[in-house]
Image (cartoon, rainbow, N blue to C red; front, side):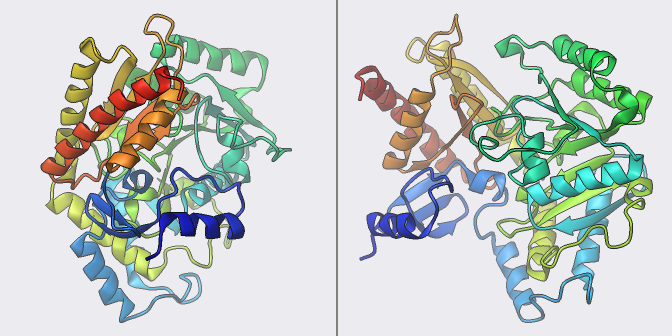
Length: 434
């Protein structure tokens, strides 16, 4: 029988150590919110492929649509010989993305590629060079995306020099003493002392920081950013790569604030497990792209387009926006009960929008000192007990829960029970110095 240990040894011999790994577990089969490894062990999935499988693993409608496409065509490159599903995906995104104005969309393959292209478009449309992003942000690992990312290690260390004319300001996180007003004051000070706003092409913002710790941007903060961008002719660019497609209880997280961005980047949940990403923006902005300025050999692959069309139908027909709110409500209320009890004084904060929920762990609730060692112990103990969990946060002290939105509630309850047992066991291990 093949074993996880045997595959781990093969990986070490074949793959660079720089490709991080969370667990030495190799998955052979998946169905909705369940995974099975090569040794036959079953896991409840509280990661969803990092918010990719919002519609669950191998949703029957996604599988059917892709199988049908396999019998037709698998690749031509859209720029060379186009096909209708690419156009249909773009039409649907133009209608779904917030904003009461004409929009246009083109497809790429990854979230980082969407970010890179959004920056190119902003420079082409405005004739300006500078960008503002925020501390703790994650926008990808390619050059511009890495530069926009607001965390040095492991994303930037050793990879310089980075792209010039990219500046970072503090993201409002009241739990860590950074108020919305402090962030806005820092932006005003930046315009007065560092870079004139007439040189800024765009402001990149995650409506909920993903890798940074699942911190939702305050509604009034997003609205004020919109006003500032309008005042200075700056493009507001929303990174909805992790937050999009019903994850936060809206189709897009910006909808919680009633704000429309000039450009929106998407990926992850758009493809239901197939690689596809998109950039949607105001039509007048998108039409500033010079001919041939965007495109990619594999972008908008026919199989991925078929999967994407199925995903959008599933979200609508199965009411996954409502279900995200129900899943999130169950998770948050349970975690808040743990926080309020006497057993888990290590829970500093529970937060999230919809089914994008996080628990921040601290050594002391008064000092709020991060406790990353505990989180590492929780995620590894959970895996031993049959639950797949991920961490996040600048300090690595946040457990993020990203279940498929289609998760059966008995599996949700089973996963929650495993998480609670894992937390107890991890506390014992860490406090014992193991």
